[in-house]
Length: 206
Image (cartoon, helix red, strand yellow):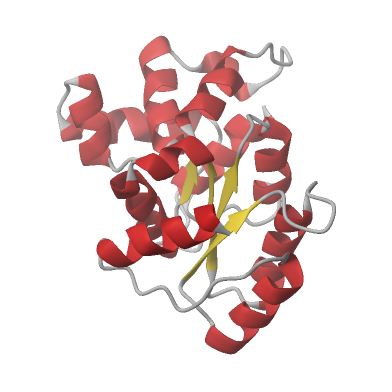
């Protein structure tokens, strides 16, 4: 309760309109149904069992209230939860470690990005995913070192400008590299699809 109230206060101080708080998954689903917030900030481990109630609630929110984005918070590094969450509908979803809450600007930025249809994944999870051994047939193996760096930063929810600043390159170079990444991953331009989100999903499933 103290952590929940503390985060709510930090968000309020950052000029985020907090419409309610919930102590468990049932209350969370009720509040979302009543208030239809832009974003639900959800702890993966909620009462009564403190296992994956928050994850299951997040999946229900996305299925029942598609206009409400979700950012999940986890105390532990659990990439499989990110994979489960993003498997079917990656846009409008985020997965961050709770330690990120200490930097409220990072949290608010993640919340803003998911409302814009992006997906945001904690940098620690991205690092682990990038280091894991992959199937030989994975298209991710065709990416150059720089392209993998760019994909990792995109997966963290960074814009082209943010990627450019992180790597010390121009936005035009980032745009060209993203286009190359999309081509190598077989993601053709489509007005109905967000290729950045699909590229992140490829990384998660790779």
